[in-house]
Amino acid sequence: MQFRLVKNRHCVGECNFHIQLTVAYRRKIFARKKVKKLCRAYLLSAGERHLINITAIEFGPDHVHIFVTHCKNYSVTRIVKLLKGFSSYMMRKNHRKLFEDMLWGDKFWTSGYFYRSVGSVTSETIKFYIEHSQRKHWETVDHEYFEFGEQKTLKNFASHLSLNPQGFNLG
Image (tube, rainbow, N blue to C red; front, side, top):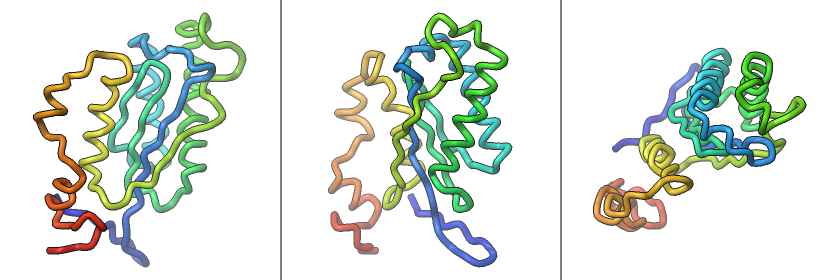
């Protein structure tokens, strides 16, 4: 795996974020497949509309993890505002009946969010984490996959990327 830097007219770099949004009152509305499918479509539509590259998106029953890559033009706060604002508005405007027993008023998301800038790991690693970690929240985890499959220790992971554990390039 290789780190990929994005080259623009006046800069070179990489800016990726793992963002987690939580439904208001921690209601488990994403356990309803139609609600999850529609919200996914609106989040992706908002990303496309604002040129925010959503590389991975995965839902728990009351939250969503989003991996955003190559987003140098927006702050995390702006990305979250654009994604939450559009998806909340469209879900409440067009599909309120699907979740009105769980949410009320003009609230869809909580006011807060989690984010982490993603450095020294590849986008493929974060995408893998987001796509496979949700099972631990509300479904049975395939422990054999994580114990004997692709999961590596930090030391093995660093050597796989030609890095020593302190992050210095050895290759």
